[in-house]
Length: 274
Image 1 (cartoon, rainbow, N blue to C red):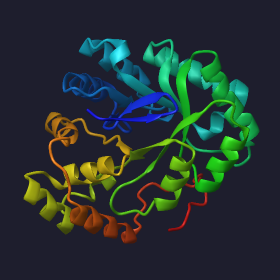
Image 2 (image 1 turned 45 degrees about the vertical axis):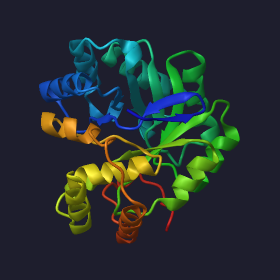
Image 3 (image 1 turned 90 degrees about the vertical axis):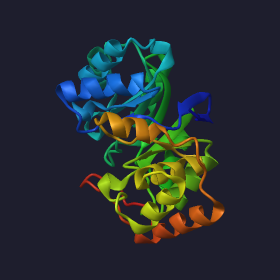
Image 4 (image 1 turned 60 degrees about the vertical axis):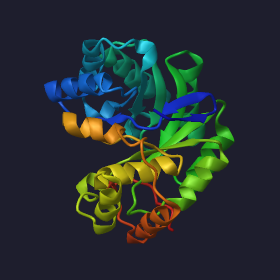
């Protein structure tokens, strides 16, 4: 496993995304991932599966200090009292005293950063989160958040795959010394079957999905693909034994022009344009 270091956080480059994984499917996926050498689990209050993620962790027998666990507080809970209730419930669900990384899941345009970021930083100060960060923040939002934060924001979790251009927000994140964590790194199933990715994968004896993950890893990005299939769990982490050439990276980068965003809810911000 390779890692990205940001402001003291040591983030494994491949993790298990758990959105939509429910009940025993989630428990078994987490258990199988940890038994397949994963050390990074991503969940959120909104996913409704923190109880199962915690159960999977315990079922695996993996030592807590070997696993990097992230959860998130949703945009409707960013006022301090609600923020604390949400986080306390998440920790209760996970049966953990702290998480390694706590994120603001989506911003709430009606709550100033001086309020929401302060609530986030308080969770680090009181030990309920080792590190804090954000998700779905634009370049402007990052600058505004950094202007008021009292703790380093270690990552910006964003949609990222070969079919979207995120150059501006990646550059802004790196300017602030933040890691970038890619969700939907296989574009919710759009990667398998894509000609360029299939062809490049065949040249390396890898799948199109593995090529997409390798592309992100070589860009210095972390990725959290979601799956409950044991074969896919293994394949998603088995990407450190090959390297894409400069020409292959350039060809995949050209696919960014598609600019296909697969996550764009009503509460999303005004995204950066390429």
